[in-house]
Image 1 (cartoon, rainbow, N blue to C red):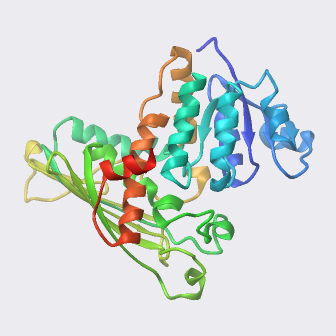
Image 2 (image 1 turned 120 degrees about the vertical axis):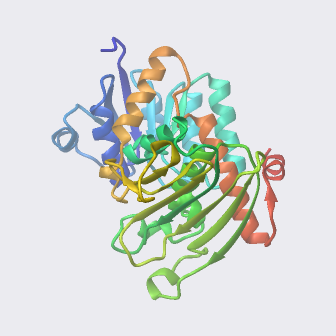
Length: 350
C-alpha cells in the first residue's frame, strides 16, 4: 500500500460530487477533507454521509488557501470549470475535473496552460475508460483478435429528461453546450480509445426530437459525426440524448480478422464454428447513474500516478484534450455545415 496520502477538496456538492467523495474515500491514498458549496453544509451531516471529517466552505478562495488540501475535484456546473480549475492550479492543487472539461476549446487550452505552468497533475472524468466493457474491448484489440480495425461505430443513447438530475441545467447552451459535450463525449472518447487519436477531420449533422420534454433544449440533442483518421480508418459516433429507451452504449468494431458487437465477438483467429458470435462475460456500460460508474478505479489510477510523479494512464488532461478537440470540431461542423479538420480547430483554439 502506498505510504502517500492525498487530502482532497471537492468543488460543488451535487449528485456527481457525492459519487466522487465516496470513490475518493474508497481509494488507498485519498480522503476528502473539504467541500466548497454555495449552500451551507453541516460537517456532522457530511461525516455521517461519507465517513470522513469534511470541512465545508462557502468561499472557494478559503478552501484553496487551505495548505492541507493538495488535490481538488471539480464537480460544479460546466460553465464554472475553467475559472475554478485555473484558480486551483495556481494554488498548487492537483486536479480531478468532471466532464465536460470546459465549454470552449480555448478554455480547455487555458486550463492546460495553467496546469503546465503550476507543475501540477490533472485528469478528466472519462471514467468509462475504466469500466469492464472498455477495458476488455481494448484488450481484445491489443491481442489482435480483430486484426487491423478499419471501421468503428460508437453510439450513445441516453434520454436526458426531467427524470434525470442533469436535465434541470443541461438544457441550456450555456451549461450543456451540445449533445456531445453534455453526455455523448463518452462515445467519442471510446472511439478514440479503440481506434487511435490520429483524427484528421470530422463531418457532423444534427437533429432534434419534437417532444415537449426535449424541445426545451437550446441546442440539437442528436448529432451524428463521421470521423476520418489519418491512417485511413473511418468511424461514426451518434450522440442521442433525446430518446425514450433504456441507456445503451452501442459498440461495433470491424477489423481484418473479426468484429466485435457490444459484448459479442467473432474472430477468424478463434476458429469459431458456424460463424456464430461468442458472448463475452464483461460488465457493460449500461447506466447513466453516476453511482454505477467506475470512478474509484479511475481515482486509484490517478493517485498511483501522483505517487510516481507521472501523468496517469488513459484519462490524463493531455490525453483527454485530444477527445475534446474532436468534439469541438464536430460541433463546429454542425454549426457551419461543412467538414472541419483538427488542424483548423487547434489553430482557432490557440
